Image 1 (cartoon, rainbow, N blue to C red):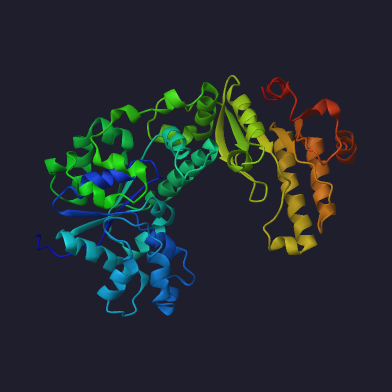
Image 2 (cartoon, one colour):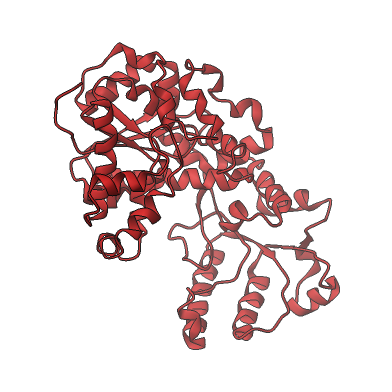
Length: 447
């Protein structure tokens, strides 16, 4: 039993499938450290209506709504009742309830240092820092190509590789933004933890101000407490380190997918020192986020991404934008658009505001066009008249004129000849989405 006082938690964060469970299992073997399984508590508290004040107001329903959604582990099955009983039913803030959860587990094992591991907490780090100003934060990162590929094989990931890649990039960017102004965090790479575990863990122990213990590197059965029931992929944390999983993307991804992934995530891959990432490509790419996230038309979108990635010299991905959001400040060499400019839902209530937003956005696009940006418009025909049909029409006719090439998505609802007339399209400037020559024609327009 360790008699030192319970300490505020340290945190392990990182995108799922990045090694958070492995790192947790290793640190949990330390005689001073108790690592708890994923709670998602602070992410849910961050999104709770009214925040901490709302949590207290809704007590104890708030406690049960957040904690009893936690996945069952050897540590807990119905943790809300454990916390409620520990507090004798006394209403507390969300932070105090969270701390009580840690105290229960740490007291059980007689360990003073609590480390909480929840990958999702990377999405609310400023909120966590506000609650815990002095808590150390450990960020573990893994090659996004391996993360994205791995996520296609688990139920909480997407079957769409590019969606997983975008979410990995988003998580990395959020941590980068947070860490710029925070001096109490450390980043380690999963690959370093696998290839040189002792050196990497020593760095983590030094950061946590605890003495390195050689037992950390050897599985001892304590890992089972961190494994969520029915999540078989977590069982690997209780096994010896497996170096065969390093750079698995080289064997698992097709050459086309490898090139597209490198094009899209090159900035983040360069930042963390992953191979095959080059920063000297002059051509920049801006695409609509739907090309990465959409499940519809996935085969078409993949073909477009593969085609762009094969060009010489290659494009490098600057950003992804939906015209519903905002216009990039830096001029891209190529911009793939598959929507028309739309303001946020509140602004759409006023036709005047909607129209002014459209005109302002189209002026930005026209400036890019005049100064050299090439535009590809993916046109999804829609002839139904809505409330703002006329404003939509103005945007569509504008894009039809300025696009260097238009990819017309065929469906069973529309007659192609009618679509050409309706949008006043030049057939020589259009490619049908089911055309066998789509990739070759697209390459000719974006070189």
